Amino acid sequence: MQSKRGGARKGAGRKPAPDGTLKVPYSLKLDAEIRDYLRTCDNATDAIETAVRRSKAFRDWKRRPDRERATVGAPKRPTVDSVFDQTQSLLTRHAAAGLQKIIQSLDKG
Image (tube, rainbow, N blue to C red; front, top):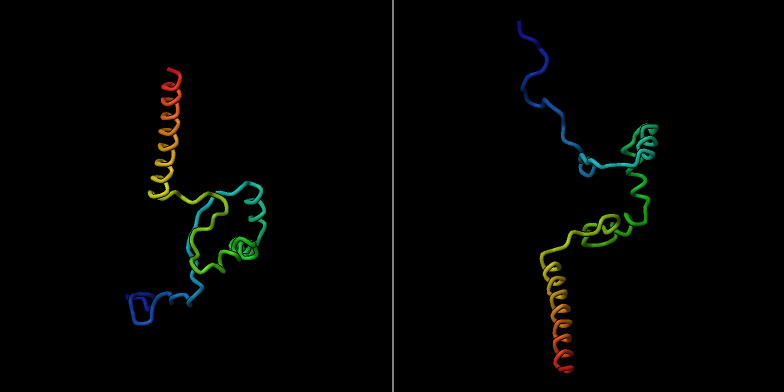
């Protein structure tokens, strides 16, 4: 006997979320005290979202037109160009120091 429930049919299934309401999964590590607090909240997601949206760092980030990664917390990952520039600068300083030592030893001799 066939069931009259479920199965593929027109209009079946969960409807898409309205624009702007889609939530994405995101895992993070929290201090035990914050975890304990969030466990007491009826809706931990709303508590976190409210705290973040009220923060000055978030409001400042939201006003920025480019909205790159915020620099609060962990520093930005260095780009290849910045690493190259830092390495070149370091080598230049070491080369200059080496040249100074050579010049000083020639002056003494």
